[in-house]
Image (cartoon, rainbow, N blue to C red; front, side):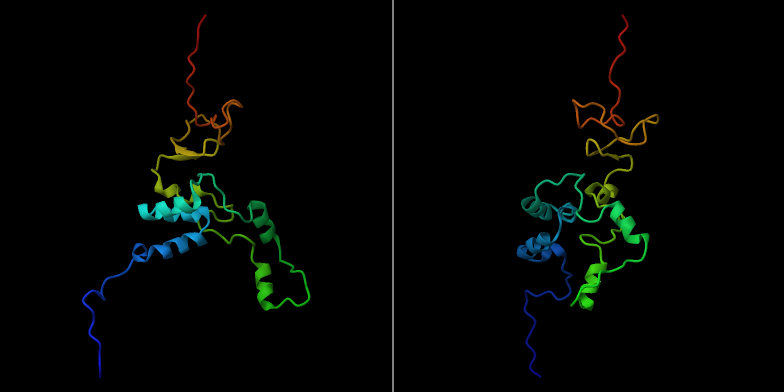
Length: 173
């Protein structure tokens, strides 16, 4: 039996990682990802983050994935789905009609529309809370604060009334 010797440069026992594949494949993978998944993969290493920034730019923490929202999921699960009968639709097309367009069930967001801050929440410290008005992670609201975020002033659209500490001093005349 004629066996070709293993080249010196080949190391058969070394496990390859995602960062070991060629850069062209990295770009191809990032091309298939939406901005939320691209940001999550980009946060894993500096090389991936630079590819993410080149393809998708800055992605806001409040960025939402396109697809069914909460009410569309409610109607989807409300009762049996009645497919419209059209002529010439095969079994392959019938399966495509049954699946929700744009998104499937997300294990992080469940049936809610995916948002970036929900996907990366576990990467932040335990004492951090997301504010929907300022679209930032920060300190949790004080004990007597309202349960939801709200805009405190029309002049300052990114100032949250729930997370902003009262800084006005009381003036006595």
